[in-house]
Image (cartoon, rainbow, N blue to C red; front, side, top):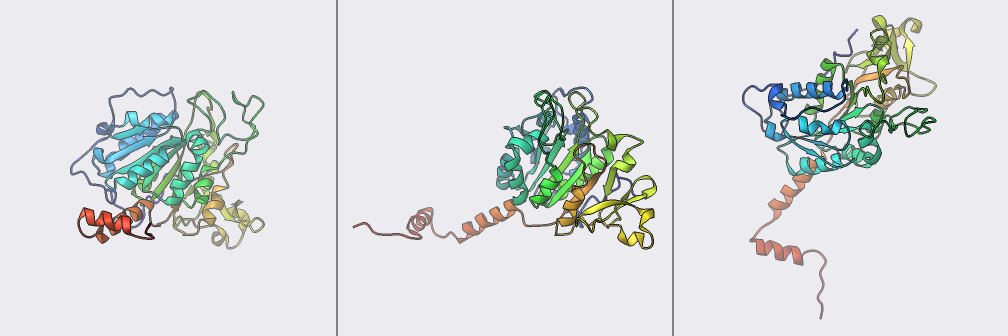
Length: 367
């Protein structure tokens, strides 16, 4: 039985550097990626763990710091650029994916990252997020999900469970929440994963795969807010409950979980989706019924079905790992190719090219 921290982290031929981005010759450490700014989050916030993981992971990319840029929106997690000694931008609410799209398209030599939260990305920024995903721009999006608005002091968010009592919903939320992984798969994102703030090994492995992916990578990070939504992910973190709560996804491996792998995922003939089953109850041929995880299947249907197992209220079962990891032409690569083609087609002096542009296409003469 594989542990949730044992996952396939890369496509065949994965390398430490990122295609198109200049590499760094020599050794780097996490200290070199740590800025001189005081880190200011609430004590116990899950953002601290993610920041440390990112600072420790960035040297593994083998890139120069000046070729890495972090763009954030608005929210607690959006302070990230201040705490990293790379280029960065604290942008406007919900628009980080759009700004990052411009950077990635204009500068092939940059490794572009977006740091956002469930409120920033899925409320005011929802439109920008889904279009970045469908375009498949070369960027890595880290979506911190604590299921609450932390920066504005505890209102319910687009991922808060139904009935959630907050300052803005004193009688309980009547909204139906987003499932960020399902949303990303529905937008046909080419890389979609979920990890946990407190699992350093798993978080680092997922980040490695996301950074190496050519195209848009979305990583949802379950992140605890100890002040306004403490314990939201206790089921997947508790020593006595996580074995039954976490469904580890490992490419090419049977999807089993629970104590000694007693549970597994099988097809649900009634709904067409998937469901949890006790392996012992499956009888003869049980192993043949257990689903084998295929993150590289071009069809996202099964990955979407697995994402629906997430219980938005109590996380009785939470699939953790890489849901989808496929290749598709990227928006920025294709845009740059078109510019290069147009440039190669241009002939003559600048004046000649301007005259050809003005006189090209449909023209008419005014008497």
